[in-house]
View 1: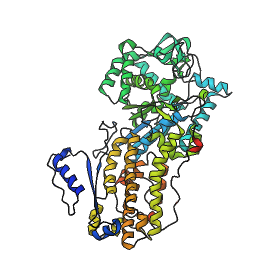
View 2: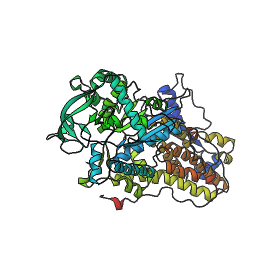
View 3: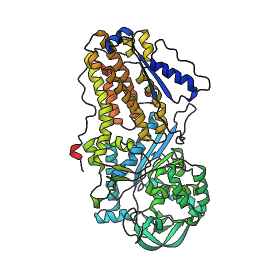
Length: 610
């Protein structure tokens, strides 16, 4: 990648493979695209014994560096050294009219992965999740269950927090829009917008979906005025409401989207925003309701309550307040606003990409940097629904398969931003392949063989002379472990979690490949020299596993901690420095109790056809 010519690679030993690699590098210079030369040599006498060859064993591998998208990472604050300084990430505030479902868990897991990555990089992280607790639908649901609305939302909030605990979702702030401090923030926001002349009263007639808590446009309904999301007929209503002058900020919104192409992610969804912002669609939107009393009263007019979206979006700010803070917008600004990333479903993109930025502009508040939209989840290719009996409930899913399996699948087996399909067979096969067959099996094999064969903790350098120490510098597992952290960091910062997992698991795959080539379980039986070689190989591979699980810790925190604990490595307070290669001994590999499988395979058969 440098401008100067590539010099011939000095080699003490040579072979046809190495000569070919050297010729390619010399011919193509800087165009020898992202090749990693991994040379592993052992001494002549050892090679003859171990590999049964008459000549010096010299093995060369050229491993292509995987392509990583060179898109600009998220606009996250970094210090002069490139380390993350702060990160504010939010899930949607979930509507508190029913128990959490798998569609709730998906953005929560994704946001938690990003939050954990930020903390791993040393950033000051504000991870916000919580509940949207007002609105007509909640009042109706509570009445149907013979509860007060407050009783209903308190119970639902507890269910969400219990699920987050099961999924190891570790939020920093939990928004509740029924809290008194939140109401003060909403009232201040209303006052700021009113002072700008952006709130006014008028009559409105249209088709209203109670489930969406919104009047629907024609493109949001099917023939017969059926809501496309809730599959129910909308109600034709006429009300006198307060309106927000969205039209006043139409051009400013359009300019912001054009000037900030990463404001809406993935970028493919930007076109939908620009369609909505076509001049023919210019309009204001209603921000109050007279049809329900369950909400925050409009300042100065108790006959109306503030529209649930105008209310709920401000939970992103009110939740940042600390107990000692006055409940003001300025206090929220000092506690981490604006958000770096809003993680939302594509069905609520209009509220976050149009209404919310316009409200912030009106109140002279900074806008979020990115709105990352995920797709819908389907089951076996069909939209999930109780009428079809194909809803995947998150609590039984975790109870049956464990936290790590669920987090791994939803974070790294579904492309974030795209629609994703869930089937039990695909879920089990993907999880078994990565966590049981690759990571779990290699970790268990290393622990088992090393504990049987090594009395005290050792570094691979303790088992090498000066010549071999030089050779270990270019061990294939070490080379791939050295280059991977930077690639993984870039993919995390693009929220390409599936790519991040694939890159980290490359180290594990290389370790599995290497251990199958060397076959240490045979070498340790042949003699002291062969045993030394076997242990040295396993210790190098184990260090690669350690780095891989640190890189995977934002996705599978519990399994990563178990493996690190078994290796005797640091597992608490992890930082990005823990992704650096170390020649230190791993105490957990020395003689100890027989290890238990770290991630047993999941049987597919009981779940076939379900």
